[in-house]
Image (cartoon, rainbow, N blue to C red; front, side, top):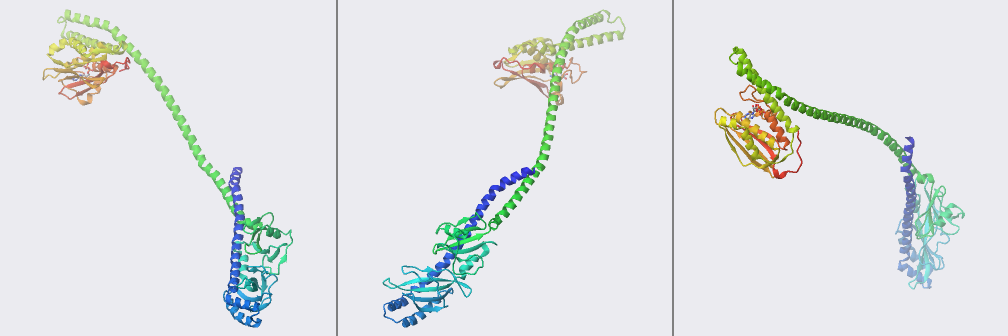
Amino acid sequence: MTAICLVVAGASVGPLALTLRAGSYASLSHVVELKVMAAEEFLSRGRMLAQQVTSRTVIRDKLADFHEGRMTREALADFTRDKLQDSLGLSTELQGIARLDAQNQLVVAVGKAFVWPRGAVPAADSRGPTLSPPEMIDGVPHLVVGAPLFSRSGERIGSDLLLINAQRLLNILRDGQSLGDTGDIAIVGKQQPPRLLIPFGQSPIQPGMSLPEDDPVSRAATAAVTGAPPTIDSTGDPILVSAALPSAEWVMVMRTSAAQATASVDRLVLVVTLSALLLALFGVVGLMLVLRPLTGSMIVHTNDMRQQIEVLERTKAELQERTHQLAQSNTDLEQFAYVASHDLQTPLRNIVGYTQLLERRYKGQMDKDADDFITFIVDNSKQMSRLINDLLEYSRVTSQAKPLLPVSARAAVDMALMHLRTDIEKTAATINVGELPRVIADQTRLVSLFQNLIGNAIKYRSPDRPVKIEVTAAPISPTQWRFSVADNGIGIPAQYHDKIFEIFQRLDPTAKAEGTGIGLTLCRRIVTRFGGSIWVESQPDEGSTFHFTLRDAGSISGDCPPSAG
Ligand code: ADP
């Protein structure tokens, strides 16, 4: 983990440190540039003062008069002294003025007396002010600005030398705010070998001291090119930054210890490194703190999911197994029901037959109990026979399923009515059959369906009114018909509307009407096999309407719907 932190910290801080170091050199360079600009401003102010003094035409004309012999030196000096005295008021930094004639002889001096250095007087061909190196006068640095004087005809007639207090320039150079603890600036004269005009530190300003050529400061001064950005020599310690002053043959050289130059950067880099390390550490720890529970919960989650999937798969497998077993046992049961009911039919028919024979031959010859027993046996045998027939019918729906084909519903109803004709005649039932379509069905089962429903309508008739039954069909979609068998019988309470379709369910098992409770179950099985559904609408004593849907004969697709039901 430590290695990871170090790599992360290194990778993030390395490029940053390089950028910051370059930035810190750039900022040193900016400091020097700003100092150069401030020094330049000071020097140009000195030159401007000189120009202001020399440009006063009245006193310049007097000098011209003297130059051409039209005025005595004394008269010129008297005239000039007052005028120059006025000029001293141009600036507090202007400490003294000396006016020289064309031969560089002093005409008059005002203000602070000073000895001007060699080179302070502008050369004969000089057109503008010249600057002499700073000198200490009364412990204060001073500059002498020399300005040539020209007659109206452009003839050189003398010079003015201005003594300017350069404390402000020194302040500009020494202002440590932007230099840091070890930063320091010197002014070096550009001549070869370079001369130290204003030395580093608080050293007193002495007349320009020559520097050895191989001195780093000499090299820095030589490297500086007027107008170019400061050059930086960071090969040694201290670092040197040098820049030429555009208006003077001076070079500003700043030195600062390498440690100082990059101190803030190093501090920053250290802070950033530590922060990066801490961040990386916290990041890793944080990641671990966050990831561990996350991973943990993911693992738990995954395990849960795996377990759930396993449970689901087990359940599915069990379900499939059970469905398979159920289908098997259904088949077995149906097989059994069919075989049992089929095989039971013959012995049962014998029992019924022989019991009826017994009844016919011996009724009234035995006692009353024996007669009742015989009647009971006959009734139950008949009921058993009906049950077996109905069960057989029920199991035949699937065990002896025939292909579904377009058949006439009307023909099926007519056949059912024919089967029911005895009951119909007996009850004088009125049965109206509407126009019925051809549907997809198995003719035999369709007859059975109508027979059960119409039979029930007769069976569960109301004692209060003649039986009236309507068989109709209406389309509910381009491919579907809804058939309705409506009666005016006793009706069915709402709570039994579903129950009556379950096997062996009879609303009143003790009712007079014979039945097995299989009829409607059979109906549902038949309709389901035909691809439809069946339901009842009924209210007690208001009759019942059994609805079921069947597919139109034109919609046959060849697919047989599931035979379950
Ligand atoms: P069942 O052999 O008893 O007729 P079904 O399955 O045909 O058996 O009918 C179940 C029960 O539904 C019947 O016992 C009867 O109570 C009720 N039922 C069926 N059809 C009608 C009807 N049209 N009117 C009133 N009740 C009916």
